[in-house]
Length: 228
Image (cartoon, rainbow, N blue to C red; front, side):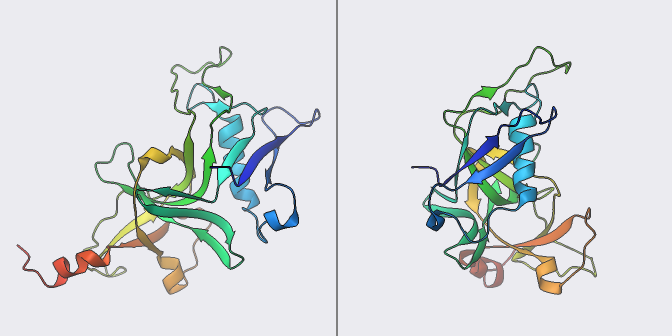
């Protein structure tokens, strides 16, 4: 599958250390460019993680390497999209359940971008760093940039500010972005951010709340079957 776009570093001899300029290159021709691109903030966060991260703690990509990207992938028979302006109708950023370190249950996360590190120069060790341990995480293959929950969703009980439901669970969304291997994506999930329901005004640094809705194939078990 050919990448839909490339994340590309722009060389500049006057750039200071630990700073770089990047662009999303959709290819030649105006028809290749969506009306709305990925946000500058998102691209800046991704570029910082991929190109400026400590090589001994997660690895980083050489600025000489262009990183391929996709606006959708298919896994387990399901299509997951991360597109800034899908079919000229609006942004489409799917949610998925991901295996997450330190949790026994999957954590929901919104997929912001798919990156393909195949053929990239990956730096996993630097002798001039003073960190005490190395974690060689980045590797060739497809990765997802995600906005995850801070923990697996849970049923809300005895909270006047949140409703209780057999088919809905609550969780908080992290303010940080993470890059995770696509192998950790285990399933699709329906998520509704509560600010979209109630029109809540949140502080910039305040974690948003969201709700997962179980699939309709499970509703009969929740409402019609006898519960022990």
